[in-house]
Length: 324
Image (cartoon, rainbow, N blue to C red; front, side):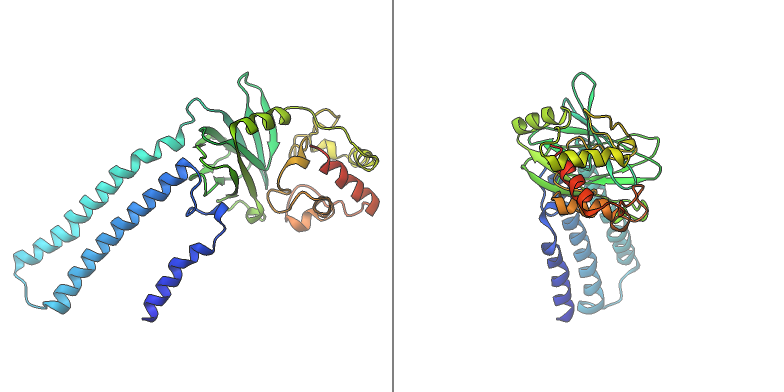
């Protein structure tokens, strides 16, 4: 009885997980395929286990008698070789065709994603071949298949949004491919699924699935230059940004900041997270990140700007939050 209770508890554990990052809450065509495949595989494994276990109980408990050599060999060959080969072969034939669609982009949009240490460079490819650059956030239109072209810088990473589809390795010097067909609008959490260094667990991102018309409006806004500072405090923050040399690592389109080392900040204030999914985008979050970067994300390339005065820090946070 204790064993059954323990097993029941294990089966209930997935219900404690966060729905937006759960393979048990599929919100895309590809995630649903994987979910159905897992159910079929589980049922197949359960059938195999019940038959083998039942046979064992029968010959050892229910009818423990001496068998003829022919019957024993028949059980070994039939139950131990032929039946598993047929069952597992059938599951393999069923599963292989399901893996084709998530690797094909079709006629949909392409998004180029490069895994850095420890953040995500995201570039949306437009019909004319130009790209709109963002970071640490992926936006997709609902009901349309989008192809993802995956790369990595320096070390191997893995791209995974459990609620939308499977995972794929990201290997330096080699492009890998994945595609998603989201079916429900919402915000879903993604994660690097390959150990990549000290801040691997802090390398997350949000995937925002939008209605097609909303996505088109967002992409058009994302392609524009940054919004100029709207308040006196934000204007001062822009001056602090320039004075501290932030533009040598970060790009803010429409300004003299053209750095390529760190994330593009052109529309930082309109994103749903900061620091690759570890903070929100409120002014205190910006100030916390700027002053304690190395503490919040160990071994990150960006230094902590803890030498800034409280007024400068507040102004800089206001400027970044106003980049809509």
